[in-house]
Length: 79
Image 1 (cartoon, rainbow, N blue to C red):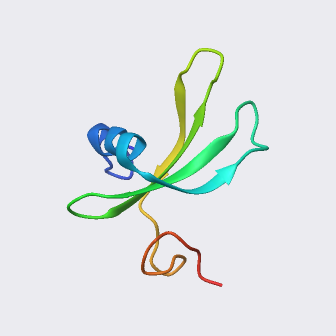
Image 2: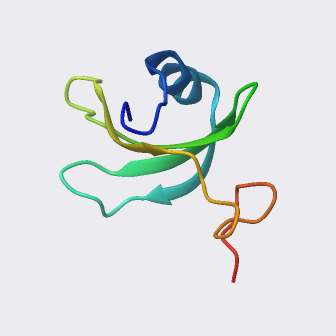
């Protein structure tokens, strides 16, 4: 996240306000979701898992989606 120059506040905002665009129910040790959010400068993808036992969220990865791989809405991959 920090290597990609994505701030902690951007990640927290994406988790709180982001739209779930893909679910990964078979991920272990916890199911995860891909969240999409857009701040003032760029779209952002955050994969996060929730530990239902204690309610903690675990951030798996954070990245700015590549427009060559994603449709202009950044919600769907290009075919």
